[in-house]
Image 1 (spheres, rainbow, N blue to C red):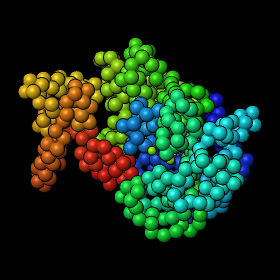
Image 2 (cartoon, protein in one colour):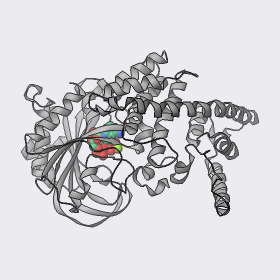
Image 3 (cartoon, rainbow, N blue to C red):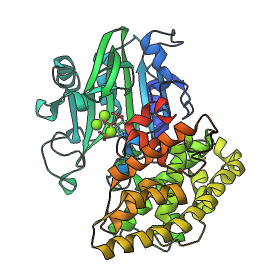
Image 4 (cartoon, helix red, strand yellow):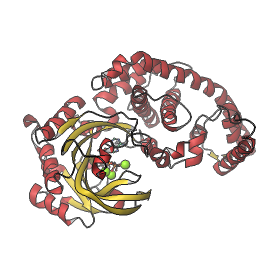
Length: 477
Ligand code: ATP
Ligand code: MG
Ligand code: MG
Ligand code: MG
């Protein structure tokens, strides 16, 4: 079943059950607390909070989303993309758990010939929040799911919120058992590769204040009405329904992947590291093209930084695949527009602009790479000669400061050489530089010019904690 058909079936199913079909909102969130739309419910947030009266009691959509906090997983797990699409059904104070669960069950198990997805019942599992006996009962009694395929999980997995103040509540996730080839028995609690999460049903009930982490947040009150927000991952459904190993091999994404393989004369499926690179290229091309299509331009902060990071990681991985000085972004952009254009025809009309933006970024990054890589190699040799297993903070800082070499790239390339990087030292020097710049600020604001390619946000939010800039614009300043 093609991706486009999965979308059609989902929307039709819920339209037939009284839901208004709402087109995807732009990736650029209207919500001032978010950088980019990271879930299907984002455009509906004011309805859940009771800030605005919903024009319809039920809605359904296929929403474009970006999750920067999943970037490091891309290509390595079978199931994480940075750009993906969430199919959702929403109730704004209308139905609650007692209908949401049976809806989901019906659509998943209904035979393909009758408009459903035809999943065999015995391959489906569900999780519920620890004390949510209500949801457990509905799964068991209304849907008929045996008790031994319903698992209880805690806050980290079964309590949903946006990562910022807003609505939230316990949730119930639905998993498809891909079979023993994919991992061990024991349900999603035991193995989330074998048991692939396809759909999350959130029972919106509470208003959250401060959110400090997945499991650490304040509940400040109840929502004006109990609501439902669900998100089904289109790419994960496609992987299952198309019988492929992972979400990078589905109809749309695989065309980009195989173009990258052809261009770099790489065979997919031969070598793990090359496979990861091919998947990263395919994924990041999708994210990059979709972001440019929504009006984002590469820059050193905020959304522009996310876009820049995607495009540069794609280029960097092409180099790892042996692209050398060749320029492949134009062709990859073409194929990405062609595959995504079926669902998003505006991309086709906007192609000249999308090309212009991506080509320019390629030119600038290839220049940076050329100089930076030469300096990096010298630094590596120096470290090896000295018999140390790490690049010094000063070396990383020089690469960043003088040659515009992003720290995450230095980290990645160092680890390929079996070297570490003294990140604390790097950050200390960055801070010193910032303090100096502050002191100079009265004079003129040119201190840090345009030499920090990736550094700034990363520097402030920490290397791995992409969640921070995923969720707040403040971080990006
Ligand atoms: P996971 O635990 O696998 O990281 P999640 O619990 O973070 O997923 P939700 O926030 O519940 O995901 O999002 C709803 C649905 O969106 C998921 O059930 C899944 O189908 C899909 N999804 C989530 N993250 C990704 C991703 N990075 N790439 C592709 N699909 C995703
Ligand atoms: Mg996740
Ligand atoms: Mg999950
Ligand atoms: Mg989930």
